[in-house]
Structure formats: C-alpha cells, structure tokens
Amino acid sequence: MIWDRKHETMSRSDLEALQLERLKTQATNVYEVVPFYRQRFMEQGITPQTIRSLADLAKLPFTTKRDFRDNYPLGLAAVPKERIVRIHASSGTTGKPTVVAYTAGDIDTWSEVMARTITAGGVTRHDVVHNAYGYGLFTGGLGFHYGAERIGATVIPVSGGVTKRQIMLIQDLGSTVLCCTPSYALYLAEAAQEMGVDLRETALRVGIFGAEPWSERMRQEIEAKLGLKALDIYGLSEIIGPGVSVECGYQCGLHIFEDHFLPEIVDPGTGEPLPWGQRGELVLTTLTKEALPVIRYRTGDITSLNAETCACGRTMVRMAKPSGRTDDMLIVRGINVFPSQIETVLLQVEGVQPHYQIIVDRQHTLDDLEVWVEVSEEVFADEIRGLEALEHRIRNELHNALGITARVRLVEPRSIQRSEGKAKRVVDRREAFGSS
Amino acid sequence: MRVTQISVFLENRPGRLAHLLQVLAEAKVNLRALSLADTADFGIARIIVTDTAAAMAAIRHAGLTAAPTEVLRVEVPDEPGALENTIVVPLAQAGVNIEYLYAHSERPLDKAEVVLKVDKLDKAEQVLIGELGNGA
Image 1 (tube, chains in turn green, blue):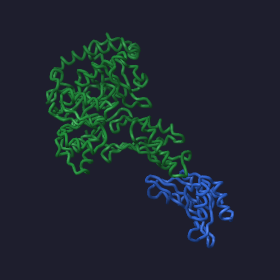
Image 2 (spheres, rainbow over the protein chains, first blue to last red):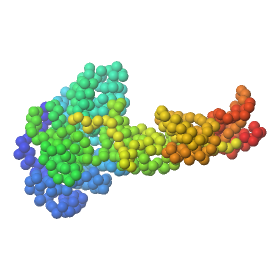
Image 3 (cartoon, rainbow over the protein chains, first blue to last red):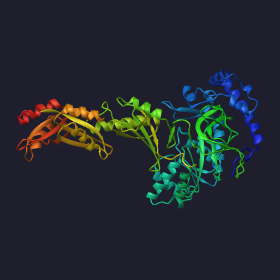
Image 4 (cartoon, rainbow over the protein chains, first blue to last red):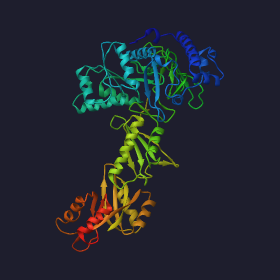
C-alpha cells in the first residue's frame, strides 16, 4: 500500500526536477539565513547560484555531527525561535547532546513521511498500533505517534518499559502493529513466553523496527517468534528522525523519501561521490526542512543505493540495510554511544585510569552494555562497600552522560586485552551488522 | 597489637586466588592468616604474612592491585563466649564498629587469635588493652 502515490511513484525525471528546484531553494535559504552555511559556502568559493543541476550537489560542503556540536544548541537553525514548535535531542560524541528543532511545517512533513512509512507496512486506519518506541527527547516515540495518527490508526502510546503491562495491552487491545527497536521485539517475545503468552497467537501482524542495526538473521528470528512481518526503518534526528526510509512488504531495501531527503553515496575516506550501486557512506541533504535544514550530512552509515523501480510500484531509491559505520559509534538500545563519551566519564571519576573496555552483547535479547574498568591502587579500597560505591558512582555518571544503564565491572589490572600496546576498547558481540 | 594486613583485589573467577598464592610462594612468603570477601564479580583477599614488604613487592610485580591496611591482632581465651565478652561487646559499647574479623592461624596454647579491622583504631586499642589486660 502507498500513502502518497503522487510522490512515491513519481517518474525519475519529474522527481529530479522537483529535487533540483527544492535544492536551489534550500541552498539559497541556508546561505542567506545561517551564518555557518554562508561561511562554508564562501570557503568553497560557491554561492547558491552554483547549483544548476543535481550533479552540482557535490560542490556543496559537508555537514557533520561535529558541526552540530560546535553550534550547540541551535546555531544551525534557519528560523527565529518563535517559529520553533518542538525540540528533540540525541546523544553527541561528548558531553552535550545533538539538539534538533522543528517548525509546525516540519512536524507536518514528518507526519507525512511517517504516514508513508507506516503505510508501507500495509497499515491502515483499521489497525491498532502498539508504539513502544521511547517518548521524549528521542525522536522514535513521537515520530511514530504522529505518523500513525495521520493515517487514522488507533495509537497505543505505551513508550518503553513495564514489559508485562505491554504484553497485557497487546492482548487486550488487539494490537496489530508493533513499533519498537528490534532487540525490544525479541525481549517482548521472551517475556511473553515466561508469562505463558504466545505472541504468535495475538493479532500482531506487522512490526516496524529500527533505531539500531540488526541482521537478516535477527529478522528471521523476530518473524518466527512474534508471528509477524518485520520491516526495517531508517532515520536520524539530524535529518528528521524516523521516516527517512523504510522497507515495503517486499523487504528488498529501504525506500528513501527522495522528494524530502536527497541521498548520495560518498567514499568515506575522500568524500568523493560514488556511483549509486557502490558501497559507501550515505550522505543526506534535506530538501524541505524549515527549522533545521541540513546540507550534505555525513550519516556515518555504510550502504549502497538501488534506483530500480520496486515491485511495490515505488520509484523512490532503495538503500541496502546499513552494513557498518564509518566511525566507532555504537547503537545500544536505540541510543548512540561513542567510546569517547565513556572515556570522558571514566576520567572524571577520581583515580580511574583510562584502562577500560566496552562490551556490547545481545545475549539476553536486549542489548547489554558492560563497561570493564581496571582497578588501580588509587581507587582500590580494602572494603567491599568502597568498591561497590565506586561501581555505583561510575554507573551513575555513565547514566547521567549517556542516558543508558551500563553494567560496570571492576577487573584486575592488565586483564583488558591490549594489542600492540593499544587497548581494544570495544567488543561488540551482537552480530548486528551480520548477514544482511 | 597492630599489624599490617595486605588486601588484594581479585576477580571472582577460577584461578585468581591460585595465582596470588603462587606469587607468594615464589617470593618465599608464608601466610599467617587469610580471609576472603566476595561479590558476584570480584573479591578481596586479605592476608597477613611473615614478610609484608617482600609480599607487597611480589604482588605488585605480578601486576595485582594491593593495599596495606592497619588492623589489630588480638588474643582471646579459647573458650565459649570469649570473643563476645572480650572483644565484640566492649567495642560496641565504646562505639567502635568492626568492619570485619577473621581468625589468625598462628596461636599459643589455650588461646585463639583474631584479626579485626575497625573504624577507630586507637580507641579500639585502648578498649581492648583495658579489657584483656594483656597488651593487645
């Protein structure tokens, strides 16, 4: 099913004409209004008039997560404060979060692309949508909420947590659609089993899962355990949140809503544009955003693009499931975590040396973040309670900085594996970027 | 009598205590008392040895984390109620908290010996000297 047939099935030539017109408008706007972009354009020796065709996009400067940090909180905004109606945030690489803003028009655009997203899963106003994405600063909860309301479905804004109640509500309210992270979907199935509930026997038939990487194998497991069709969704708050791209029922790549988000693939090392079929870093330019337009955002996600028309009828280009990251960012329970953030926190705790290791695991279906810290003589206390207080303190500091609960484990010095003098900082056992 | 105990951080998994004991044996250090405290992930081995300086050096050389701690070594009569009456109750009455306590393996005839870590070392010493009258 297609929500916006006019746009989603546009011919490539019509689409490119629309993209070019919108790109020119967007570039002119940021050049005139946002000092950061004006300076970047000038450094490159270009003006908005440089853009004559879509190929000229490659002449525009990149925007990175670092630029968001340097312009914290809202230095990249292109509208006055009174036009901003919503703020969301995701974690940044160091202490400060990445803050994003929306005008009323942006919320409308977001609702539309999310309506397309949810409709791609065959969801209609007759469905009951169990939305277990977190509501709050995270874009997942409200993004899905507005999209599901836009199509007229019944939304259960259950948010995260209290898993037993979630299972009860899925049964009692006859939920047909499940929206959450893929790891939470598996956790729900496991918790249901412990309660003697078989989710395959509920009305659930479609799941729209995202906010963290997951493999094809995990999809099969979810589909088997929950008895539903599991679709992948992609998005990031810097661009809009969820709603950048989604799989249709054919599960053969994620359609990018190109009339709003202009995709490119670049070489992660040189930044040179690559042909669509080739694997590289996804770069996105917003075409219709008002509060926070973004030019050539380096997503850090490795993928490739396929412009063939899909069997579903959509002409919108399909991106492959991301197969990795260009940086060391980890996505744990939907939250972005950089090892540098963890290091910053540890170094703030008196006496803790920068000998640590981050273990990410999915043994118990939910992502588990464990931070191993070597115990030096500076922090060693003769009493158990002193060491437990240290563990507690590190855990609290990590929670404050990352918004995520990590298990802290004190280990003996030199027990963290070092290779050629350099400690291995991250051990990811999840196979998240597995066989996709 | 005040003695120096060595506390060693050990992960709670097979072979770690064996490693510590091997380090001590190689340094020709003999154990006089040993106590283990544990949590799910880690533990603390508390030891009193014949040669504290040599033991500390060997433990550090082996890359283990250790810290010296001042504790009290006290003789008590080897009879029912003695520990309670001569140590625990008097310290409680004096407002001294015992952090932990364990038995010492070396002991004279008809006596037991315990090692205790308290929050107020000086006060505990005064109390115990008065109580035992034996220069504890």
